[in-house]
Image (cartoon, rainbow, N blue to C red; front, side):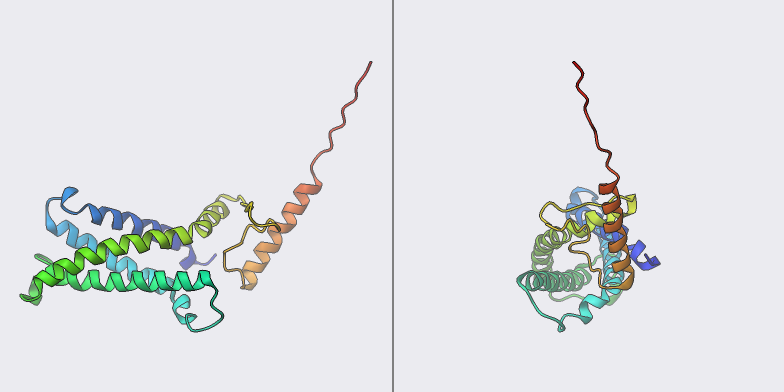
Length: 196
């Protein structure tokens, strides 16, 4: 696993937590500047996330589209659209960090756009996390040294849903299958002897 892959899961967790805290808004922190700082922080985390997953954007127009991929693409594009609306409306509504821009018009529209896009963002973010929950749990179990076999996978493939087209991914997959076969062979046979 290279250095970039090591920060993906912590980055995703951080993005989720910051998003939840931002939804709390004035209930969690009465000062608006905290909301603005966290919003800019989330924007930076989004840029890092997009950079780490840039190959996905390059592959949008390649390959076949099954229903799962269509749904994933629609959800990801909707998240990106909501994020753009959140950032633009947040800059317009800013009372602290972006006051130097001196934007005076469009405040009513920006407030409505910010509220609508934030609610849709949470819906699509939840769907996005739900689509990737299998990948996330497999990554966590790989870090712990465990292998999770899916009940729904007849072959017992622990890497179902994980992109394993690379040579390294194939080697890990073969190693996992070999160790599973060894564990199966190494199971002791118990013989019960009944004496009268």
